[in-house]
Image 1: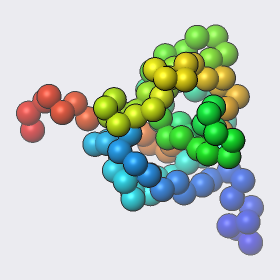
Image 2 (image 1 turned 180 degrees about the vertical axis):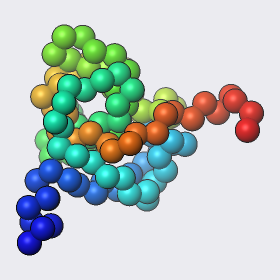
Image 3 (image 1 turned 30 degrees about the vertical axis):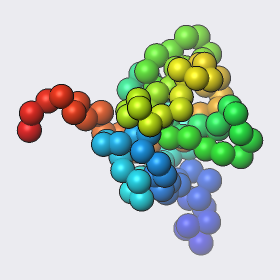
Length: 110
């Protein structure tokens, strides 16, 4: 019963592909919440793919431009994002990732 009540508000999302690596890796499952606030720069979001109906993308918000946002994958070499399809309408963002991790800078020493 509780799962049925929470499903419209909480969702488990499996990462597919390498566009968000090394921050999020393929096969990892992250928790997403129905968007309840404005999208902020740095947020990791789940949005409708502007090129393909029914397909979802996991990307990071890099900039806001009024009612549109620029989204990018953390792994630029493996990501299809706003550099290709342009800024997206904020209304296409349906989920926010709970406790998003900061992008990992591969040039920094551990």
